[in-house]
Image (tube, rainbow, N blue to C red; front, side):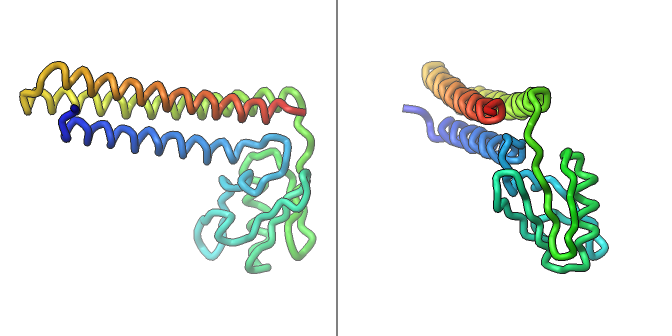
Length: 189
């Protein structure tokens, strides 16, 4: 039986690891995998109404076809700013303006670009693993500190550390599987 204070450290670590995995999934959604997806434009910022704001606050993004994104501004006066924001986002996309909405044709990926995107995905995965290792280190320090302060048995400390390592391995495996799936999606022609 693990002491409630040690369990609290494990629960906190699990929340941090879960947040790291969720962040990775949302980051990978923005990495292009051949098909047009509205999430591809999540990183776009638009200068509108005197401030910089995310694209989804000034326009509706849709993917009516596998090779086309449409951006329909809520206010037609911001269409030029939206077009500039997309062009300046360095996504390799060329927006065209038809006066009512912005059309973005998604060109097919080259083999070299697919490799670059897979490398980007692996980098994001490594960042998530670093977050998980940081959560493990913080929890392990908390476990040691708590066991010394509360004069808990070494067995209880080792049990808590074992549970922590098991949790770390589980989340690292989930990250690896998520990355493998994304890389397969990217490399699929």
